[in-house]
Image 1 (cartoon, rainbow, N blue to C red):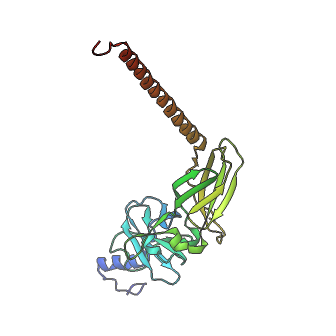
Image 2: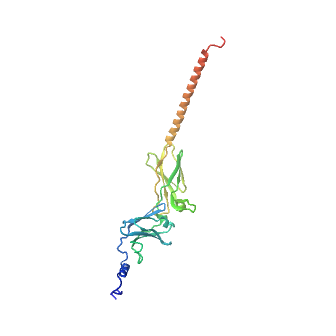
Image 3: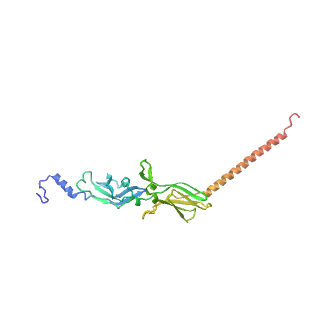
Length: 274
């Protein structure tokens, strides 16, 4: 036997296999710059570098759930792990394994890099609310929709962020007079705002979702900024009425003029029988 305890005449193939056990895949590069990107619970794991001569496999480890494999033997540097994070209040860690092929990681665990911990309920970014309708008279009335998530109900409809956050979810409205820099704000737990405003001015506004119970990422993305056209609408109404009145006056004048001409023509005609 040799110094390591195996026969000197051990076949070359077996020597290579034993060498693989000790060597493993430790020379393969491991992932770096691992980040979680999550909006409305749509979660993408990203990392570097682009692999050359090897592959990546992603494992998602939960505190209480079984390990889930995603993006097996991929050459990409990102992976959609949304389906593996359905228990949104659980904390997860991702392992990004570096492997050479389907048969090279059977002897020992391949080298891997670990991500930071991620809890979707606390860390996913709240997306932009969709403003559906708004009007202004003596009040600014706004109706908007909750952002949807990738998760579905049994009937196939998508859950909204309200379905997940429930009473933890609020919305904040920021509004100001058009051409002014002074902002006011209001908060609601519903999908509407009704704010008393000065009906002599137009107003601009935007909305964002808020989770007050969070320590970080409390505020979501801002909706698009919209402005009312109350003054313009009033002007248009007045202009339409004025045009209608002028048009009616012209029509009546023409009718009266034609009647006068017809009456004058009849008066000039000789009487019948004379």
